Image (cartoon, rainbow over all chains, first blue to last red; front, side, top):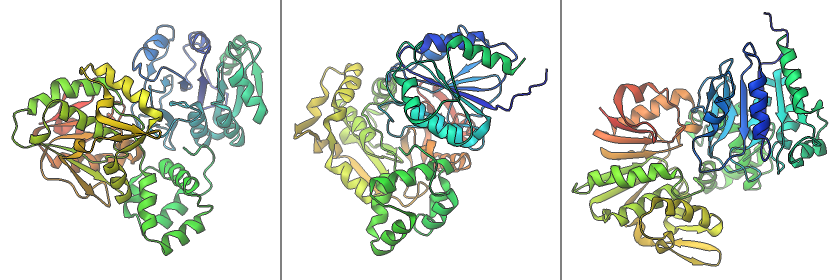
Amino acid sequence: MAIKHPYKAIVIGGSAGSFQTVLHILESLPKNFSIPILLTLHRLKHVRSGLAESVSLTSHKPIVEPYDKQAIEPNTVYIAPSNYHLMVDDDYTCSLSTEQPVEFSRPSIDVLFASAAQVYKQQLIAILLSGANKDGAQGMKIVKQCGGTVIIQDPSEAEVSIMPKSVIDIVRPDIIMETEDIITFLKNMVK
Amino acid sequence: MHIGLPIYTYQEITELLHAYIPDISYYSKSFVERRFQYVCAKLYIPSIHAFQEKIQEDITFLDIFMHHFTVPVTEMFRDVSVWKTLYSKVLPQYRNSSNFSIWLPNCSSGEELYSLSIMLQKLSMQNNTTVYASHRSIAGIEAIKKGIYSERNEQLNANNFSKLQLGTNLDNYYTKSFNSLYMNASLLKNVTFMYSTSILQQIPAHVDVVLFRNSLLYFTVHMHEIILANVTKHIKQQGLLILGLQDNNSITVLHDSYKIENKEERIYRKK
């Protein structure tokens, strides 16, 4: 089936209250949804394993905590490893960093979104979900500046609305949707 | 950390810095762009031209720049399980060695060095061990020697340390005054600091163990091969290399010159 959409990558960020939403999105995507997904979820700093395993229980796709400079492949979900920032480099590889936390967070959603925005430009979709701090808002602003598509979970649906609301404070999202509509939007891309 | 579109291009930055930091091209493009801007903001340098003027009028500024350009570690005993393995399995192998040597090619802000030194002291191995600690900045070395750390990370460091279950508290290794922690000077008695102008220079002769965690992250893939080949030349046969948990896992030298000692903790034994 020919893919008509212009997108080359999706980045998703979330914190408190986002985990079940992420699982639901990933399990709902069809097998032919091959666009790579990069995921930064705020997580317990010193719990090294478990997140990728939990996500992989419900997803059809390989879930990877990437090594530094690992190539970004289609049909794969990349999760920021515990205590590392995850970024995208110009050569479409994952780049990791132990630089200072941003918005008290490492991994930081801002860091992932800002780097992916500069590489994928208008071919990027960024989705920000529930969360209890402002990490991700600056990243969304840069996604918008670079021509990417900015989607936030409807704050009225989000378990904790601070994170999606903080985007609205500094940039106009392209789409504000509830989870089921985000899933439909993504599914329609590969129909 | 700088979040935003780069104000200056990689080319502009490297053209400026190349005369002063010949190995600037060893670092990855994205790292150079964001780190240069981070350091400029930290040192109140408003523009690339101001940076140029500053570096021309005060040559010591270059050292200060490198001090901040180097990424700090931010916590002691980061990745507790690695330190547990070091304490219970790696270091005891060398307890009876008369001249055991460990090299930290990038001792950064010193937390890894102090973590290691605490373990060596606890294992009564300071007298038979030499620790070589390389650093790109004299200011960085002096800061580590002073051993003053903010109390901001005290709880985090103490939590990491308590998970090691060594039967002692971390605060036995420092004194606290005015929101700062002063590491015990005795921890560094067997440490030799080495100022190097490049990651490829000032390498000690054959060492038993190299602790090189999360430092390759900031270099190009091409340099990963070169740096690791160079490090490997200076590790004794059967010596150990310890990388960061998520460091590049596809480096040819790693697979050609080492066998895996501990996959989870990224410990490799030289063939």
